[in-house]
Image (cartoon, rainbow, N blue to C red; front, side, top):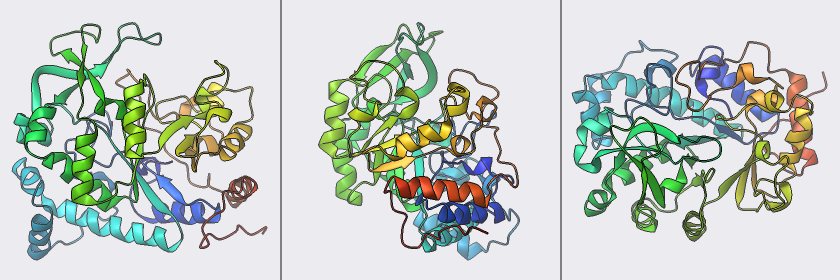
Length: 385
């Protein structure tokens, strides 16, 4: 897992291709990223100006020529959202450039057995293009968050507009279908953030200072995803089912056949029924060593060998094992991506040139092979030179 902003250049240029080469040499089949939308003023990709448009900051060639015909073709193919993006004052030329660069990089990865995993936040940002263009799809007077728990007695006040699921249902969930269509165009697999919100979500009065005065409201449940399946076919998603997970969330996830998540970071200690402990893992899951919202392995467990914990994840029965690059590199919390609840100082970590060595690729390859997580046939075993 590595967001493109953490590449040395932050662009989809040479070091993005170099990372694909390194992943293939290390026997890895998936590259996972965070959301690709234009981030907010503090760099959060989860508060993007658009749920559909990509950020022009990723472009390796931001001034490449774009013809009028290319823009018109793009506008027609993406008619559901492109005109709203233009009406907000944006130029479609950057979206055409992004599509060129992204498609080329994705094809390069496929040739080397590396596929891409995306990340789709459940909510959109306040005053985003989506919020302004479709006000009828959001409830007035309420914002999103999470209820108080033992980790935070005031809960979490996110401030995103919350969906009016009844209004969306009356429109056949068109907005959500188009949003899913867009992410499936870009990625081979997509992580659905805050999956529990599709079962029920915490709604907070808009003027509240914290989340304590919020209340639960029902989410769309299965009808949303069945409508999307009818329009798009099977949905290649991972359900981010972390946090306060109740039986209705598990029923929704399992009824839809979506794999959920477990995190080794939360496996150490705790009760015997802790779902993150290795013995409680299920095959239809994705196991992570840590996430972008947690401390790194080395930061949280300085007395443990990070590679022992990576090997633990690799030996899980979960069908897919995902490791943030910071954990592969053994970096501490100076490399952490996000501190939930803190607005500043996040999303800034960058890989340094030369950190991805052949020796590190060999070690990850051997760890993967020892766990019988066989690399794809196109993966190249690292040489000993």
